[in-house]
Image (cartoon, rainbow, N blue to C red):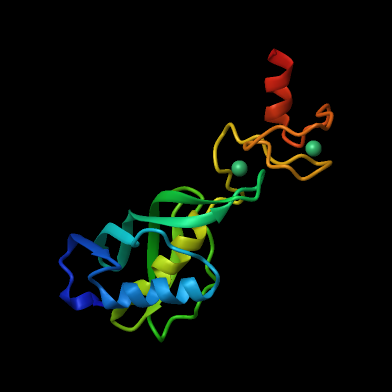
Length: 178
Ligand SMILES: [Zn+2]
Ligand SMILES: [Zn+2]
C-alpha cells in the first residue's frame, strides 16, 4: 500500500487495515510466514499519519498473534502482541544528499526515509513486526522448564532427578519459599 503524500491532509490522517480485507497486508503476512513465522490470528494495524510539511510521522500500533517456542520448556504456544510504534519519515529530495538512518534519541522515534511522492507502508510495518517480537518468549511466567538431566517437561510432571540446579532463577526462588 502506497500513500500518495499530496493526497494526505495536513495534520492527522487516520488509517486502519487488517490482513483479512487488505490484499497488500495479506501478502506481507505471507512473506513473513515464508521466513518461518506462524501467525495464529490476522495482523491488524491502526495508526495516524501526521503530515506537517516537510515532516511526516506515523504513530500507531500493530496487533497479531504468533506461534512462539517457549525459551524454558520449548513447547509451542500462541503469543498475542500489541505493539505501539512511532516512526518519523524523512523525505529525501533527490537533490539532497542521503543520510544514514539514525535513532532519534529525544523522541525515541524510529527514522525511516522515503523518496518521491509516495510512502510505502508494507516495509514500515514489516520492520515494526520484527521490532515487536520479544527477544525471548516464555509460555507462562510460572513455566517450570525442562529437567536439565532427563529432559522431562516439568510443567507436565516432575521427574525423579534432583532439582537443586534448576535452569531458571525464578524456579529456584519458588523452591526457596517452600
Ligand atoms: Zn514454557
Ligand atoms: Zn529429570
